[in-house]
Image 1: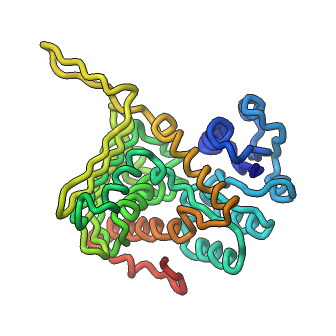
Image 2: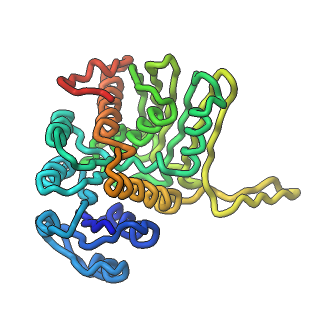
Length: 343
């Protein structure tokens, strides 16, 4: 049984706490930390059967019985806490992104050199049953040589402008999942990015210096092309779809809904809306990624999403930001990264 400490009990920390408690048989949450220990957090911890609740994460890092930590705090703390946890001898599962600063990600990579620490990055969509099916279709050769990848990612409602100001921008906060999915589905790296964006959902997001609507096109090293469309608000629910088109065919994956029932009558053909948010859509994906993290620790095998997988989508996101600002295609090689080995 792997003992886990969760550092950060906000929304995503609670998602992991619930998924581990209910669905991860090889691990238990021994302790949690949160900056503010309000009644809601304490009540949730009690409900989950988590007895140790701290207001100092060093209590988790210093606990010799804890084997691994999940870092679920704000993005600006991910890389420094990662380094502290590695030095404390804890295996690390870090929510995306590791950092918005490439040099800080490199510092984490250096800290991992010559260590036996397992370090996994939380790109949960790789563990969703829909995207796994698409990946398997590509890897088995059913679509042939990959020519085009299309990804749609639209949230059901926009975040507040206060969040946008500290999020790192749409490309590093939201689209980063889609950049990772392009790499995952294609088995190839992105070489060039061209991004267009607009403020069409909430003008306050624009005032905060960000966009809420985007289309990004990419050239991949295997010759394929990819396109992502994003919106911060889809009134009908959480819209997550993908398509891989190739020389032998095409695989498409759609949205999950509460049922597949379709009603046809004189008024029209009506089906269920997509599940409303990521908590519903991806709960089992969160459990699956932690299950594989735990298996890597127990069996001393590679984690499925490593620190390099955490770095590359950030590079793509920074290239997309540069493209949007300069209104031109940007090669990933223009984003300066020295001494980084790409696996």
